[in-house]
Length: 148
Image (cartoon, rainbow, N blue to C red; front, side, top):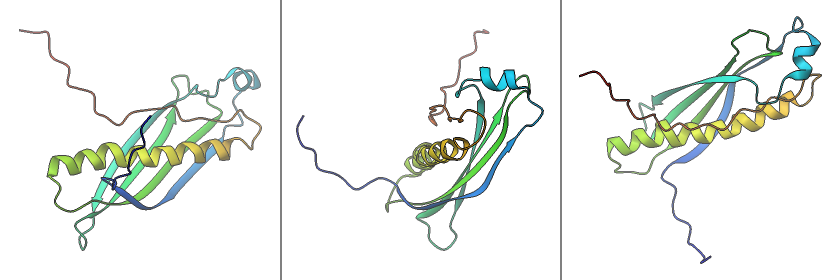
């Protein structure tokens, strides 16, 4: 493979922090459910909020909120993570490029941080560790209606 020069990133994460971390154990879940649970047994929802800086028009705050849910409600942990990232964009980008970077790349970067953080804090308890599954922030293409 040929050597490649690095190029300036399209988006720079200047800082990130967790503004909410909630991992509560459910003492009512039975031991059989805990022992049979696989590490990837949860469904997670993710929400992305974007805030523009009023003083610096190239600086944005992206907030990724991740929560777990199960159909049967028999989960061992109740999880909510909110990770905030400060992102700087290069000058002179078109609006559609800005939106793609902030809605796809920025939350993907924050998700990786949240994934490692959740694994670390859930590896220390009596229950199996919790892994966030891999995911994509690329929007699903609209489905076409089959109706005439």
